Amino acid sequence: MQSSKKKIIIGVDIGGTGIKAGAINPEGEIIGEPVTVDTGGDDQSEKIFKRITDSIDKVIQKSGVGPSDIKGIGLGVTGPLDNNTGTILECPQLPTMHFYPLRDKILAKFELPVFMDNDANALLLGESIWGAGKDFGITLGYTLGTGLGCAIVIDNKLFSGTNGLAGEIWPSPYKDGSIEDIVSGRGVSSIYHSLSKQWKTAKEISELARDGDANAIETWNIFGEALGISIAWGINMIDPGIVIIGGSISNSMDLFYNQMDIVLRKNICPVPASKIKIVSASLGDNAGFIGAACLVMQGGI
Image (tube, rainbow, N blue to C red; front, side):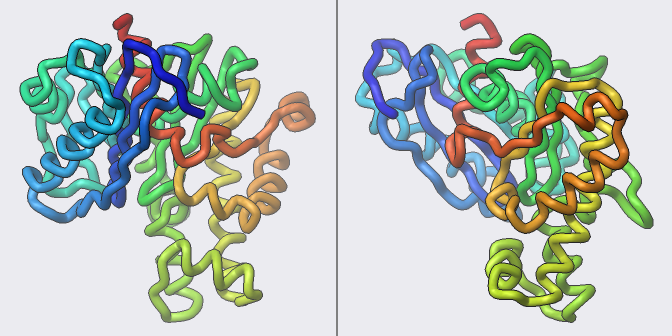
């Protein structure tokens, strides 16, 4: 969907694997063509920063507007973050950018209002305003990518918690490790390796499962069970109207949905068990940068 409005908002979705940037107008319509590049998460921090700024520059060029027509820049970044200072904390997906002042660096580069939050929060905010959660007062979201993200939106406002870390469930205990050890792209690869002694990417394991590979099918069953437990805790805690799942791993939802659904409904209260919907992010591959752009709108700009 494309349109042209005088004022645009730029959103940038920054994960451990990929960076996707794009522009929208205040009605949520995409302007120009989004830009996608590899993050190179283990590279030096300044190389990653340059990929981010180059992506923003390309989006501005493709949008055909000048600096005065840009309302601001929203950054959805894999966490954890310090949103008060706009700093990336000890993020396992971006090991060279620990304590990196990303928001201030982007502000200095572009001299535009900059708003930053974790990628899961940004994605769910966009889905709550313009996507699958727009008709629900309380939405709970999970971002399944290189790592695991979780977010809560209440009446189109992010619930951030006391320290801005609400939804940072990735270190929560699960069996002998953390939930992210299983529910993540890295987790999928690790599970498959434990079963087959072969290292494959999550995408490759999806292809193998669809071709009938028994180890790949079991990998997604194990993944679905762990995700179902995680979602059950979330539903029992906040009683949302809908649960939205996004991120690159959600493209494999057909492989883990049934196991996930069985486990979560078995472990939640009877009323939500009969009502709750678990759906994919409806904004698709653009959900991340659209949600990041929504951070600018939420900031009142």
